[in-house]
Length: 187
Image (cartoon, rainbow, N blue to C red; front, side):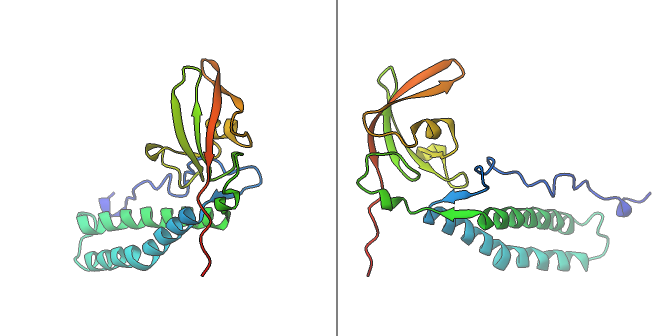
């Protein structure tokens, strides 16, 4: 059989991986900044990148033999990737619930959006910000609200000692400070 009649495997095209499972009840908690970033990415893919790749594929298809046409093959693959990301972002935004963490400004209790400084039993201090699954970046000291550390910290107050179950047993964390962003000024 000719190569022109064979098809690459699309076996995972419909299996969009979620960074972590949504919360019980299916909500995807995000800050306004995180929600806006996902939405901007979605519209960039729909309005700019996808039409540009469609044009490249259309042009490449007109060049004849598609089986050895790199522009055509790469373009079709890139379109599948873009469509997969569009489906993923659409589903995540459909279940998104934007949380205004500035409502807790001045509170000493840990909720979504808090920046928490805690000390472990050796006295090492760590500062983390608790954010949504789709927006947390561990390299910036941000953790997902469904992570084990965040779950241990949530609803505790400054001065509380919480227990974190780790592979080697349990670890105690003392909450040293809790901060929230200041409320935006209304104009």
